[in-house]
Image 1: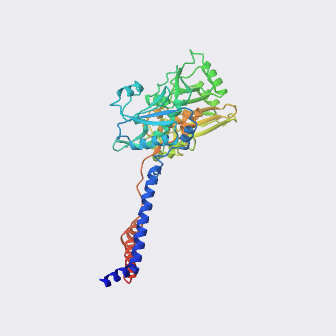
Image 2 (image 1 turned 30 degrees about the horizontal axis):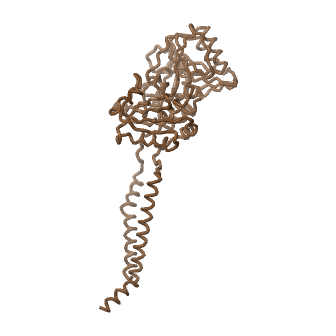
Amino acid sequence: MIMKKLEIRKSFKSNKFKYGGYATLITTMVLLILLIANLVVDKMDLKFDMTKNKLFSLSEQSYKVMDGLSKDINIISFNKQGSENQEIAEILNKYHSNTKKITIETIDPSTNPQIAKKYSSTKNAIRTGSIVVESGSKFKVIDGNELYNMANDENTGQSSVQSIAAEQKITGAIMYVVSDKNSVVYNLEGHNEKPLADGISNALSNQNFVVKTLNLLINDWKPAAGDMLLVSSPSADITKDELIKLKDFFSKGGHGLFVMDVQKSKFPNFDELMSTFGIQIHQAIVLEGDSEQFYKEPMYLIPKMNSHAIIDPMVSAKLPILFPLAQPIEQLKVKKASLKIEPLLTTSSRSWGKKNIESSKTEKEVGDLEGPFDVAVAITDTQESNPAKIVVFSSAGFINVAGGGNLDLFMNSMNWVQDLKENISIAPKDVTTEGLQITKSQALGYSALVVIIIPSIILIAGVLVWLRRRHL
């Protein structure tokens, strides 16, 4: 009995007991540290956006808008509790966590129809997925479909999500409900202009533009500072009297956007107005000879997107532009020195301008113009203290193209003309993924690392530890 007690006491002093005790103590301490760290992190609600394009992070411009808030904002997400879109929920939480002036609530429209009805209208019916941003009595409805940009697969015809536009829409809605004045856009009429598509009208409304019709032949137009002119695909020329009024408007720092369509006859008064901007739109149809810069037909252009505040968001979001039936835009050699003309969209050097616009031939003919061509330009007259700003598109068909970056191109142009940089700088987040491309030698190397090298290191380490501990 005494011997057993001595052996037990002796075992407490052995190296095995010491090392075992140390190992147990260290393991206990590590587990305790991990437990405490988990509790602390859980309380702090720390999250890091590790996605490639920072899908769940807000842009610097959104934070600037929130930092300048002087009014309380309430954002309502119409969803059933627990079934919210997690991507959108994460983005909404970013707004709430940044400022106490923004509150977020979730309401089920099926169980609260009266609340849903309060915000519904013929254009914006509240449904599951809708978001309402309100401040006081002013509110903006964002349909769930507007939170994503879709793309159609040309082979299967199926549509898929290409980018998230939630931040664009939500920050734009916040700016709308807190602003006391919205940009007024006068849509020119009286020349058989094509009506604005519903998608364009809705986008203008969503980004806080107030659209009014303008007929210079019957209206006495007295534009206020900051007002803008929109000319959408006229089918007849303006009169001399209208030309004088428009020249006067732009000479005083007017803002405008022109969407010009291909016409069989010349428009001399429109041509004269364009010359005051330092450009000429040739009466020809651009055809593209580079197969990578057109879609199915040479006249359906996929032009090069040049670096500009209007274009950069589409480039970063990888949103292509489809620009059908465009006309060449030439910068005049003789123009005002104060004019700054910046190309937005350009064709390749293999493109040409077809002078015979009624011909069905797609081959180059004698007398055709040689490319490359600008087909969209941004113009600034820097002479005035309040500079005139104009964007000219030589295709009317591009605004009716669904998908890609066409709608963003139009809206970014509107915002640039009106100096609304906040609406431009928030780009949609690309959600497309790219497969990992590796060579055969890289594949063999990774296989050897996983199958041979790492297991060998673990085996050698285990043998060394066993050899060392067996003598303890």
